[in-house]
Image 1 (cartoon, rainbow, N blue to C red):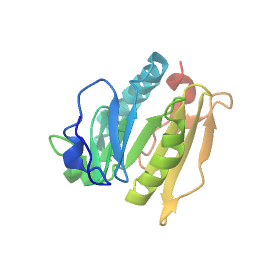
Image 2: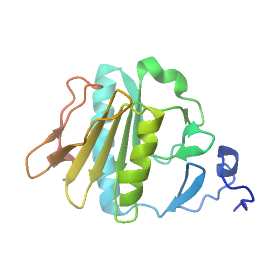
Image 3: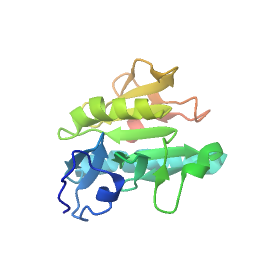
Image 4: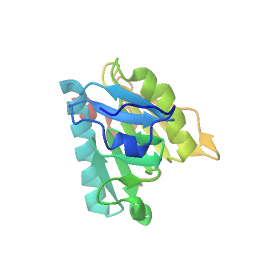
Length: 185
């Protein structure tokens, strides 16, 4: 593990982090480490990945990637969202090694260890860098929050719940409808 002598971590430092099964990210130059996800998290991630990927393959409007895959928002902001979508018209930000810039859609699946980071720190980060839509999925509560960029910031979250029979929809992905029941099964 590199030793940090300066006050802020950078993408160059990030490239030296060990492959240790944990998620390493840099937000505002700070090094964040989270443990690997649990089985419930992985099942929800897989269900969402499959549903969105099927939609994108049918409509040929973009690509989806799942963690671990680096998103370099700036030299001091490098994250690995659970899922991310880049639409076709912005495919130039996709490189062989990472995404360089804000994805159109980012999905984070919260756990007890990531709740504060996903709900506050990453929400502000994604908003600041111009992510057009941010979904925070909570497997424990079987809910999701959907943030959409409006002007210079995210509009207030739209709360979706399994109990209410809600579905994911998105103006970025016209005609997409994913019932939460399919995601949390």
